[in-house]
Length: 171
Ligand SMILES: CC(C)(COP(=O)(O)OP(=O)(O)OC[C@H]1O[C@@H](n2cnc3c(N)ncnc32)[C@H](O)[C@@H]1OP(=O)(O)O)[C@@H](O)C(=O)NCCC(=O)NCCS
Image 1 (tube, rainbow, N blue to C red):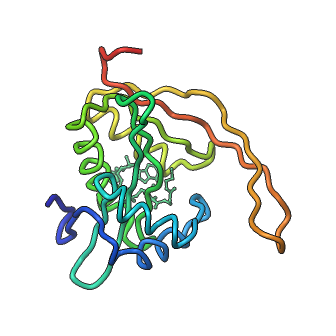
Image 2: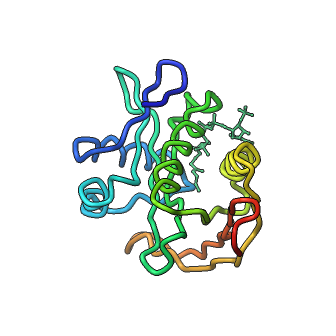
């Protein structure tokens, strides 16, 4: 498997469930869904779910969904790297592994929904697009109400659809 330094990137499996959720909980940019959701992902969607680890800890996770309406479309769903291990190439290694699998399956257009102020995620996607000869552009704005449960006020979330295509690919 690929890696950044001594970090190994590998397909995720069910045993990673709680460590993946613990990583997701470390960032306000991702919503932590239920154990059931991640169990389904790690059992039935794990072709498109990768983790990065050392022998001691799980340091990163990335997951995506292939459209079953337009099979050339791939949605980059969640990605996170443990805070103290950022800027060492772990996310790029995860993204490369995930998108290589998607591309091998025939996907050539990648979408992501990124908060407008999430410069780390936008910087990562820009770097990946330019390194791989793809183009990146803003798509539609996505606005929804997030309900964090009875003890929290519903909040409005605004994200920007980001579209990354192979240069010369279809539009
Ligand atoms: C986004 C995130 C996954 C990037 O992880 P990372 O392991 O630090 O990224 P990498 O080290 O692989 O960075 C690769 C490139 O991405 C870009 N990048 C990464 N972090 C960046 C930042 N904070 N600002 C600008 N560009 C950044 C840079 O071009 C970087 O290359 P460089 O370090 O040589 O300059 C990480 O910051 C994170 O977990 N953020 C919180 C969760 C999140 O926002 N997820 C995405 C939601 S869509």
